[in-house]
Length: 479
Image 1 (tube, rainbow, N blue to C red):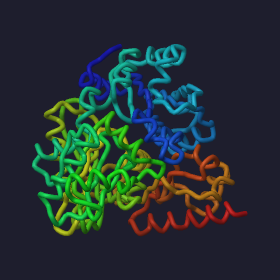
Image 2: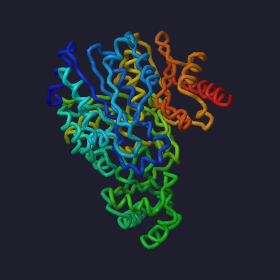
Image 3: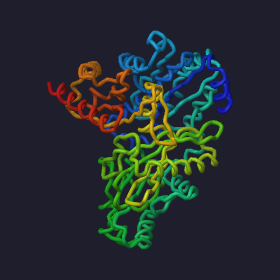
Image 4: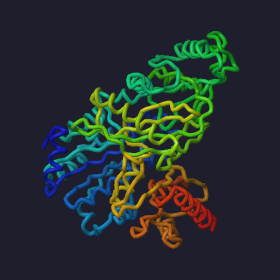
């Protein structure tokens, strides 16, 4: 059963009529205390339900694993989005595996503790010519799961996970020759942070603010800012830092942040002034080592421009090609180091400056919107123009957020939401190839939160559909 990743890719391409299996393990294998700062994090595994759309291939089997049970209504919602494949054909090719474990631990760890669940996965794999594991990110836990199932990880080798850390990102940017904020990496503790902050200010006297980042922060929640108005030399910074380090995570304290920093390390870098936008680009490094562009985006950020809220596709015309070109340069460096799979590079645009901020060697908030749009419209990204064309030749854009939320939405059921979207013509229409697609539906009634991607011919139309959806949800939520 075990095949090297390039060989598996060749087999899938040359033997499409054979049965192939994707085992989806959307494990949030990050610092678990930090993740608890994200509202509804328990349901972020559901973003990769977009992988169910891979059942559009008639011989594909999908095993989807989750910490908690996912209702059949939600499963059927995604299966009904698959063009040209009735649910009677797709549902038998889908196996849902749940650990029924709500504890704040990585899903991968939960699976490894349950031999019975692993046996169920192996039973499906045994019926297929090839199989591979798709994860949110890849660490030693995912490597252990890969060995336990005797199938390859379809992603970055776990031993190279550090390339996507904050320090690793800065080092890759330097090797690629792309602009990045001034700063220092590989800092072991807060004492080193104090020294780095003072040195950064001495080198850049006009700098007003610096950013301190945990090595393994998630969605900006591991970031903190320091205002040099409280002191700029080592002695004054040391005295001011416990009282004036501003954390993006509301529940964070200096002691908890310092403890995490001592455990994982991190960086200090300049807070870039005059930022007008935060574009990003997705790339893919194939099993054979080819780097290709998958998309560009403008990110929607909260928390003073530090916390990811959503994205718009495509990125603005004025920097789209530069963002893509810089991402490909970074991708070449990652490729030379042996990285594989999806990655994304985040930037900030400040006047004439386009600075690279971080690398995400994982599937993130910009993965599922593009994945869904590609399957539902049978389309593709055009790197030469930075646009997306459907199978019918239409150009498409989207507006996407993981943070559509209100306490009023807790009164809504999944069925009510979808029924309302249908009634108001907001669900995805395969004829017009326009409409809204929902993710994280399991968080709706518990947290009043849902993820949505609005697809349309223009970005203005996508935003208009999103605004209409919010109006409808506000109305039915208050009834």
